[in-house]
Image (cartoon, rainbow, N blue to C red):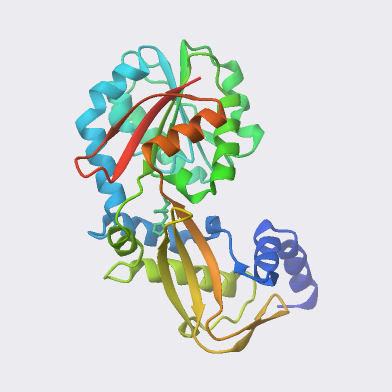
Length: 321
Ligand code: AVI
């Protein structure tokens, strides 16, 4: 590569959130990396594999709750509703709900990936030709992707946020995010949201330290991403995957443990790693029903009801403004 091209590339790189967040995260006393960066193309594929694992009970438990209670959920949402889904991805989870709703006025999925969202829109339109699907491309934490809602008239808006995604935010961040969602809704509008419940630590730790080591690969992939996108030289064999339940914080923490003291370079910056030191890569918060109800209230929602599985591993809550 000639010097001019490489300096343009470096400038672009230094302008990215990924660059800034990684350098700031590795410079802290407790090294951290924001979990949203686990999901590049390889990471997203690995996460899909995690969802299929026997040890990872969350996805299949949530799907079973939807299957069993979909009629009651559709009744709770009510007729003529517009369903809004932040971070919709391939929109697979919402389909059974859309099919069971009485005369929904539309579906408004928001996602950063145009390819995945537009393919999903085609699939849903083929299956439900009378449903208006308005795909909004972008980051759901930014105001612009919500603009399209202003032109849509509807009897009621219901936000759909499954997958225990809320668990990857700290309780304060979760309260702020739900408050941000609440501000997009009006009186009588609703929220249908999935949360993983507090439970036995053995079950929790097995879900995040699976016997097939897919979560290990998912966790280490963030280092591979830094190597390829930020010119890093992480040796993945010098890091081990660790995930444990922290009962006081009610969360599973995911870390990468350094196995031997060494120096790592990222985008020309040097970072020292001591043996045993960790990079904290993800939190996955678990809630009790009452704890989550309190969070909903603080964010401006009134809890209405919830549905759970027989083992009380997971819950889907309905709340309204
Ligand atoms: C996306 N999120 C809800 C997953 C979770 O369970 O916190 C991410 C994940 N991390 C490791 N395994 C799955």
